[in-house]
Length: 215
Image 1: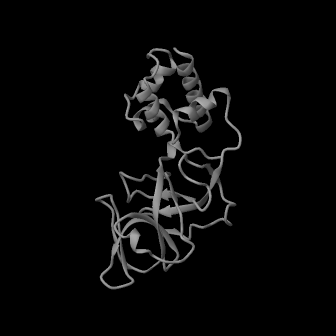
Image 2: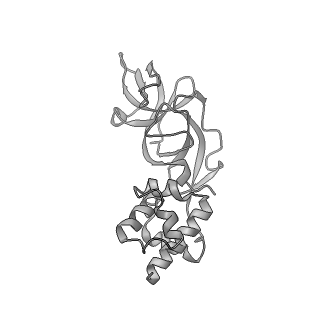
Image 3: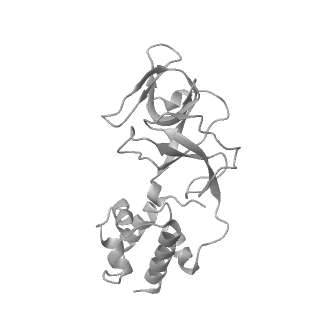
């Protein structure tokens, strides 16, 4: 292995240990053979090509350089984002802003997102399978006003209905002005028709449960 390859592999080990990640799920999340990471860590595979290293880094929500920076242990000063609570994807979840702003559990801020004004929620239920699974984290930003802006229509959104229930659904126009249909992606799940929403915000980023680093 080259020095850079060894540094990437050591950084990968450190990150996987910190996040309690398993070899096969990470390999599959990166679009690689199920045994790729296992063989790499055991020295049974050649040094990862740059394309494979990029895939693994992307699956971790990082760059190759950021993975390498972990070779000497976890870097300090990583920005974090608060997890506000859970949001329903089939399961009925009451008001999910269960913590004072910024006081909830924290998760590392994914690369490319500013930690300012961004909130994470945990998915509960399976109505958005196969895109979002229970335990996954969704990141979103609210515009500071209780409203349903026109640019959320047709997109997967985090939203709150007038009863105070939090949802992640695809939002479509309802049968009357001010009403909305909340559409599930799982064909076996129910949709919610003609509801009023307090607010809705598009999902900016999705992190599978097994890849998110809670702190």
